[in-house]
Image (cartoon, rainbow, N blue to C red; front, side, top):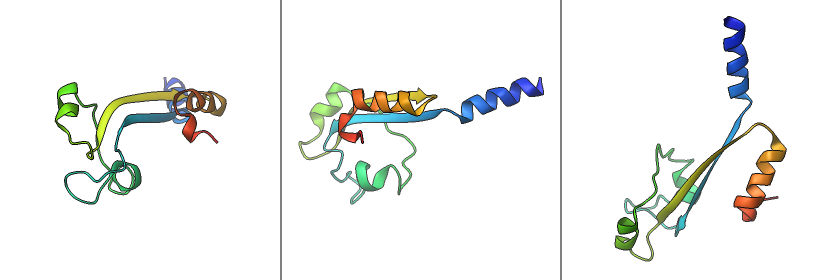
Length: 95
């Protein structure tokens, strides 16, 4: 049983997860002030959660405020699969 647990843990530790957040004005400051999602919010301030906005919420936001239209999470067991996904879903981030 312990060996089975170790195998499962090893498999989980070998996975890489990417989160793709799509929206508008993601580099604009949030209402609280100078924090934005692209440069400071997600990493430096360790935002704990984000969520997709409803159509109504998107309609209520001004044109200069950030919106989150969709969030996609993917897991990968290989670097090749990760690169292929990035090339398909977010080619502007592909190297």
